[in-house]
Length: 486
Image (tube, rainbow, N blue to C red; front, side, top):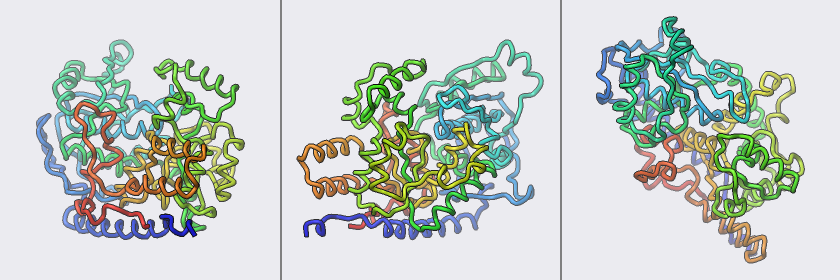
């Protein structure tokens, strides 16, 4: 039978191989940690001149650390502060998360005192949450005290300056450390307090290794969610694990994404009008007139739920697989999910797994809800995002750091072409499935070198998707280059 000749994906075998690699990575981490406690990596206890090369970090950071008492806190780094940095993180959870990591790195490099970052309250989601509502603020401060001083509020002496003469700026996007040293530091020294009104993509993808490792330390150790969020996230993971193997599908098909991107495939006339009106209502969404079909053919649109169902089947994911949708409210609701649910009856989300009482403190707080999805996404056997947005990028990087857990990075441009060929009858199902699998043979989150394109940071590989400076050297060997079972 022709079907028997197809290349099929054995997802459980994938999980076993990934677990073996995770175990090997953990053993190396244990060896390194036994030689030198993580909080002593490069804390010198002395003042370091701004711009000097930081003392060498260890070759790799441990996946996670916990503090059981104040005796285990890292010693405070003693340095003369050059001023205060106050920042407002913009965007959704993952965009803010990456921005916070960058701001800590900048504060450390310039010998600044950092105020606990503000979170975005003006975006589409209008979430009123503060930093301490999402992240464990005391852990954040304590775990980085050997690097940078972080405070919860500004000294009283700045009260008048904040009211009348606060120096505010947006750092130039994708700037390297020299920009901050030569252009920003003089402003901070002059004004004593500087406010960054944006934090997204303000630091280059490629920096000296010691700065990259600090970005990782902030991201994977210091930014821990609140106990409330972690407890509910762990419950979700436990419930999903009861049935064994599970896949997380980041189905980025919410109203804000469709309005912002102008991707209108499958929407009726009323929905097209609603989404277009919304796009024009937000002045910071700069692109207004958008050719939806042209954008789709360029691979710049999220896959629709209907397209996603076909792709999952083509990849060989079995019908009875438990699939968790990590997303907000899907635009079009049950109508748009019907084909996907028919293909995969075990489709669930947090609203189906948790009670209304459990979710009540999270309602109307999109950042808290996204944090739950983040925790589940990190722990899933397979993670599949349908759009290369901030969550897809940051989660893929975290999964690499946690032991190269399988992440299927969909090539949407190639998939759109294959989908159209299949739908118009140019490809049989078997040809379509074979082509989809071949396209993604080496797109499963395996070890790879980050692609650097000088002068084009938006096109080159994102640091937080592949933080290679923080990964075990052995993972770059050719023998570990593929995790696909054929």
